[in-house]
Length: 316
Image (cartoon, rainbow, N blue to C red; front, side, top):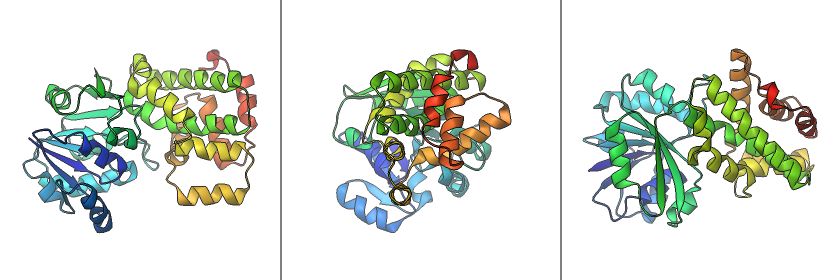
């Protein structure tokens, strides 16, 4: 069994760690030599290469674990070497230019490729440290389900199996936007009652978006849904939460901009993409819209409290 992981970042290497002591040949691909030098020292028994052809040759499963804005060019490079292998997408987010999710990007290039999407409330460090956590796999292909079940599921990696390849990536993208919002309220020292009112309404809003885009509402109750949403929104380890907390704490513009420049904050681009997607499709997302306006139109973070005051589920 050969498994190829495209992406040598924290999550790609964390996934690779799941295959230790399994009967698996693991190959990691990265475009960056410096990244390879660093990670090869941490994983001396795993082959890490800059060659897509070498990485994917005779592979049984290709796992995508690269930032979503790099997926299109990577898959275009992969196409000449692709041999109809199963593809498992571990990348989260939405393309900030096309407003496509990873599966849509990949299928626009590799038509009819068998794909699955895996997501859940799991920081890379927890996966590497063998802490118990939950993931959700969405796929319509039994070959992918069987491989994930055999090689990834264990007593510490609990996996749910669903078929909703629409709702699952929505959760994985928009939860970063909601984490910025929750961080704002926490930074502003709002009481728990108000913060968790926001979180509950955020879950309603995501559920509504899933339904409107023809996904399955029940996906919100999976590890990829409520588990990941709550973890990202409330954990100080979350970069998106931290940005929101800086804004809500009334930190200086210089300190906030410094954090933006030094840190990858997925929710920033996602807020803009989700706002534009909702606007183009005439979908009412009050919390998402307000967070976008705070981030991009100069509105005060206190505007999020006003949105909460006027928020009812009838808005959706």
